[in-house]
Amino acid sequence: MSSGSSSRYEDLLDIQQLLARYAVTITQGDIDGVVSVFTPDGTYSAFGDTYTLDLFPDLVAAAPKGLFLTGTPVLDIDGDTATGTQPLCFIDHSTHDMRIGYYSDTLVRTEDGWRLRTRRMTFIRRNGNHDSGIPHAFERTRQ
Image 1 (cartoon, one colour):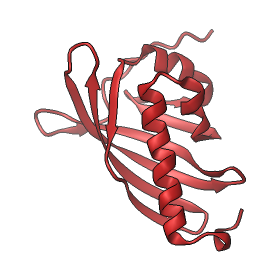
Image 2 (cartoon, helix red, strand yellow):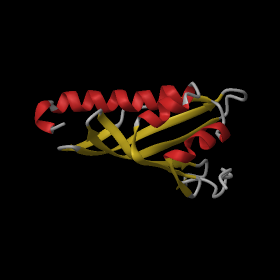
Image 3 (cartoon, one colour):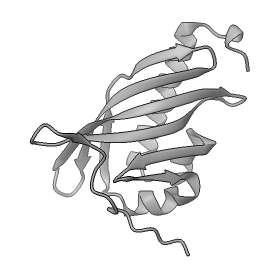
């Protein structure tokens, strides 16, 4: 799909809907929905590591459950690629404790529309630090 077939506004709306789909599907525990917003070679980075799509089911299963409340992303679209930053407030369903931070994304236009290529989480700590989280917070279950 060529960038010539859509306007900047259509691209903005399409990407915003893609990122909303990420937040809704992960909130609902819909692993297939989460995977569907990424390119086949897509990755998610947090907790001191980068995870490929084959690890997403275990990663989502191990993650705390709750509401992923995202804000409007700031996007820089350049033809068939884009970068963006999107604020996140995660609210744990059982304690209502919050984690805050933001995603840093790279996106690409595919035959199926816009998809995330990379999504990196940065947490904002009470002390003001911005970091990727505690290394090894997620134990891999692969052999």
